[in-house]
Image (tube, rainbow, N blue to C red; front, side):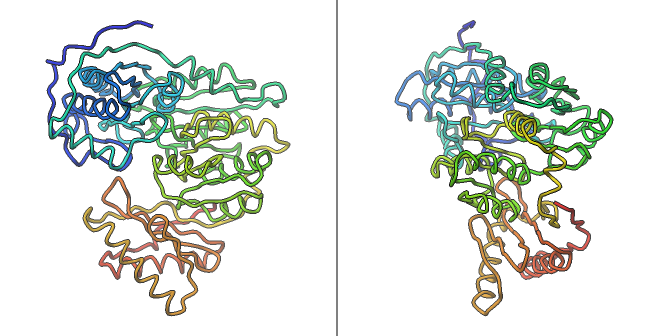
Length: 487
């Protein structure tokens, strides 16, 4: 482990942080537009100040890491300098996925961790994800960074920056829970999409039993093969083609910073986050009867019903990785998951979202099943779903629109309409054998809409309900062109 003192801070200046990049769960901006090195320095100094005060120490121990975006090295250097200028002991875990940063916080017993990452956003974007200890740092915490930077209420100190690579230790931990001795050999294709998980994928592919083929493992912030977002079917096409060509049992894919998992079976069918959660939940409930299992409000009703049918306590919660993590701790949940592929294992693991660990657990599950992944998927309930529909609205109107919809739905229920309303995150209305959702995005000027039903007639009725509700709030919408898919 090499140590060096912080870079001279005269290269950077503190400055107010543009409020638009301070999001609900993290900080996100466009490099050299809303986000530059001075901004990163200011964020680092403010963050280290806050952590030092909360931990009651002049030298908070903070871990940092970065993804493979072209702007990440420069932003990382400025961030580290900012933290050190506030007196922090900064441990640089190196280039890798966001879960490696989360793991490093536990492994080093650090006070906090901050990741330089643009996640699954376009190559020109970048940002920061943060923790305080093992807890998420979000919401008002992130706003406080902006307030501190603007007020110049910041600490001055002489911290250090230490190189502390974590790739090997992280990979070893990912392997720890794989039951090698009794596993049947599988053929698996991996695609990290040139994102930050690339090196870890190569290490896992070399160490796991079975036959493994890798695609796009060279970390390249220009993402030459395809954009690394496994929730978009087009981004999985290369993986699907390779799974079929290799006659593989399954394929796994990751987003740009490796905290989300996508998967396909041998027939090229995509498994969405809530479908993988069915398999993980059944496995955990076989060992932990009555365990609490959390899924976000966008997840299929089939998942919640399946958890209950297998003796678990199903809990629907708000979308957002920070919100999910906090709720898991509160409820002592064994696992949680989102439609987006964020899966959080507290069963045998730490409770943070880790696409790589989730992939290892999925491979382990299939390797110890009498069925193939395709056979497991084929037994899931046949449902019709719309994709996640984003409807652009004025930022200042998005929450008001949802509130207007909520008021009208409650009036409909009072007048005798056979609706069941869930208000945990926006408006989710159960009707007949289906449901529809309308919620405000926490990160964009948009509404999120989704519908699910067991038959076409009900699905069309749900879409008409959503259109009517949006129209009543002055948002004309035509959902006829939205194609449904089996799920």
